[in-house]
Length: 194
Image (tube, rainbow, N blue to C red; front, side, top):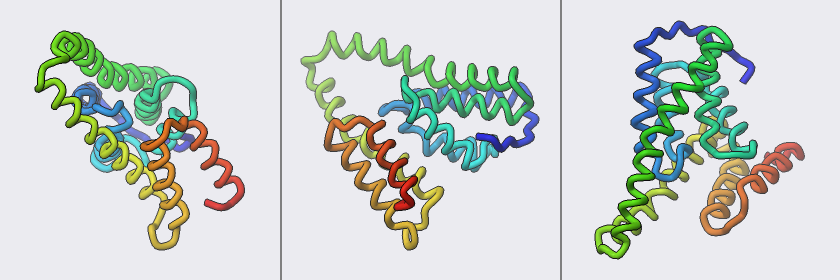
């Protein structure tokens, strides 16, 4: 994340960023990573607050680091802040994005968990849980598509696409830890296979 854009965001833009992450928080059924395609659309394509490289680097660093996956949101906020001037705006960006992504989902999750536990035997609760089970993998697949398509052409980079497909299936069908797959990907890249 060494490239820096020169941005001049005022309070209305910071508020826009906060409100966008508030909404994304309520859509992040599979975790914050499931909303990465919309984050990319908004932060990179629409607002130009991040570059493709900064966006993808934030996700890669957070996924490789121990701790919660939501750390990529903090890294994006940090980079947006750095693109706006420096350390203090970096901290402001981190605070705004993390508060936006965590506040609604945390409140809603706590309330919904209590309610669904109290009503776990109702038919509607069981039906909702079955319906959500198919949505989460679909959101994760769209995230993988976005990350691979930013760097790979399907006709020339088919090994990368194949690796992404295999990794997606392994994560979906087994309990293999994501860090093991990231390590295997790094090894394949270091060996020049990908």
